[in-house]
Length: 109
Image 1: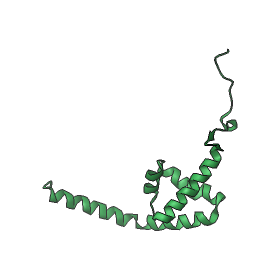
Image 2: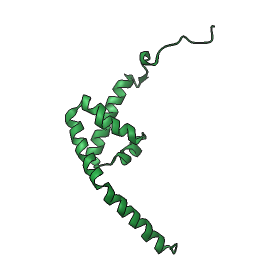
Image 3: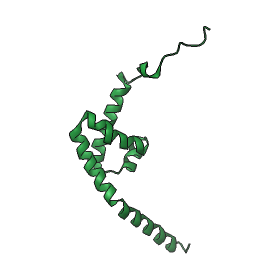
Image 4: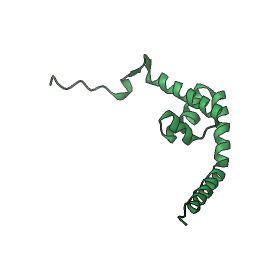
């Protein structure tokens, strides 16, 4: 059949993004993510929003991929994420408090 291209397994396809392979792109993204987290003291959610990717991708980039690429950078980023994780219950409580204060000011409650 002339219209159907031959089957090529996905792991053999080397797609290029701006002249580099996808693997290079992912490694660069992992480094950029770690630097953003460290510089901005950002949470996983904030980082995901900034880079337009999922929270699970941010987490995987920092905890798994970056360990193989740059262990020292991964350790620094992990410190920030651990602090953010230990404080998240406080941020959640403050957000809930703000929500109810806002509702009472607008006469909802």
